Length: 152
Image (cartoon, rainbow, N blue to C red):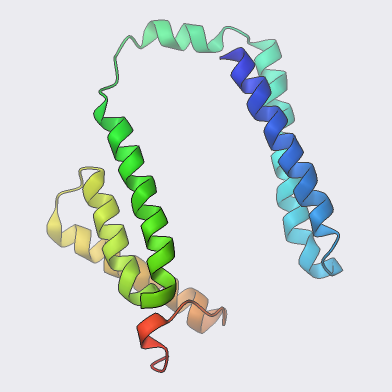
C-alpha cells in the first residue's frame, strides 16, 4: 500500500500544479478558486507522503485488526453507481436537471440498500428542490432545464 500512496500523491501533485497554472489563465478573481483548490490538493498530497514515510506499516496494522472479507457485491454497487452517474450526465442536458435528478438520487439510494420508500422520495425530491433554489434562484447560476426550458 505504501507504493500506492506515493503513486497517488504524485498523480495528485501533477494535477494540482496543472490546475494552479491553469488558474493563471483566468482573471485574478476567477483564478483564485482553482488555485485555492490546487494548493489544497498539493498540501494534502504532501501530507500523505509524509504520513506514509512516518507510518509505513499503518495499512498492515489495520488489515490485521479487520480480518473481515468484503463481499463482492460492493464491487457491483460501485460499478452500477458509476454507470448510473454517466447515464445521468448524458441525459440531464436533454431532459433537464429537475426531471432527472430525483430519479437519479432515488436509484442511487436504492443501490446502496436504502429501502424506506417515503424517505427515499422525500430525500430525492427535497435535495433536487434545495439545489434548484440555491443555485437557480439565490445564486443565479443556470442549471440545465431540458424539457422545462421555458418554465423557469
